[in-house]
Length: 296
Image (cartoon, rainbow, N blue to C red):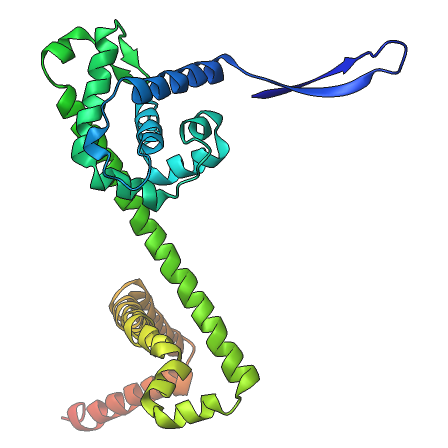
């Protein structure tokens, strides 16, 4: 609903601001549908199959039929709409059943509800309606006798949605209980009895060490990830880069070239008197040949 502000003049007095709620067309259609379903349940459906209930079953049948026909099948959403939504509130007769009561009613009377919903759809079709909410009522489906199957699928879908929401809510509730329990334990140990932590540590040493070391998460992480990563890095660094690239690869070849170059430089620069030593050897060889070979 949109909110529209207007100014109403009261004779010669100053205009007074007034707020009105404007009902849109969709809301009007939902109100008409809710009124129609309420009339259908109260005046035309035979609820004798669930009359044994301790309370009047009509409000529950109304909100379930209305909710399912407009596509609302979650018991939690239906319960919330019984508080917030005008058509649901009117159909529930001002009551606000919780989601557990709605789901329990559907499960307990599932067979009767299936029969009632099929009866309601058949009456709507007989009255010339082609659709009830989001449920199509074309003649082919009615003649093919598939209304019962469609209603069964609708109830099964509602059950599936409730179970999924119950599982999610259960996990949230468990986490909340764990949070509250941990908070209470912390208050007791750190404010009420400060000697309790030491007594527990002395009573359960392995558990204390396990929790003190944060479940040994850092040690496990170091053993599983850090040390293997360092080992692989050293393998590629020492074995790959040092031994292969530096020893046999481009760096190794360049190192050997440098060694040969250094030797040639030493020879050319007269390092350790290579020239003098070579001349001395030549003079000695020439003198020996002249003395012994040339004298003959």
